[in-house]
Amino acid sequence: MPVEAVIGVFVKFLVLLTPFFILSVFVTVTDGMELKARKHLAKKTTLAIWVISLVIYFFGNALFTYMGLTIPAFQAGTGILLLLSSIGLVRGGGSAVLPENSEDISVVPLAIPYTVGPGTLGALLVMSAEAGSWGNRLIDIAGITVAVAVIGVLLFFSEGLLKLLKRKGLDILSKLTGLFLASLAAQLILNGLSSILK
Image (cartoon, rainbow, N blue to C red; front, side, top):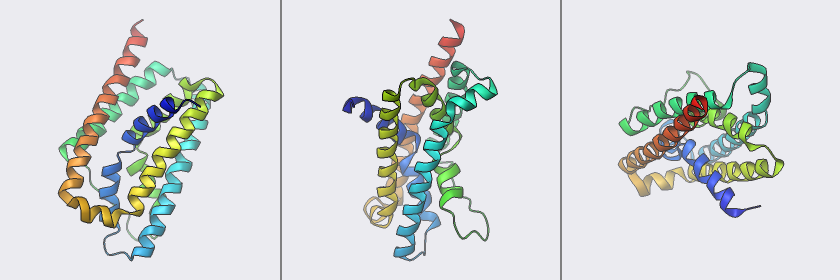
């Protein structure tokens, strides 16, 4: 398995997951929670992110076929969604809104939609449709797994990271993530439009 290819998927997917945004959300929603409960929630959230990502990835082709979608059209649409998400991150517009009286927030809203949002879902579908061989799928799965593991580590050690980075530091890193996400969004839109116009 080419290590460079796995690293490429890892970096791309990690940016899609907006790690510092979800870290700031996690710190906010777990404020006042005991350390043991926070770490348990971090584990559950990480598992939920991984399972959701792989389910979307593996059933991507079937969904494309069923809905009659083309890859270029979906690339363009996904790029637009990612661009909107990146603008929100750069402008600092992301906010955490939790459902009332919710005991378990690991799946909704932490895993989806805060971590695996519409743009990430779209990107997973595009990755699945473009993968082709099982060799490419294994590379994608490895990259996705490592990226989700990094998110898990960030959430698990969220208290220490908050003390190290402070809230201002997290905000700055979220904005930088937004800039990288905007670049990825622009590339997806360009790829989609160029294929449509050929």
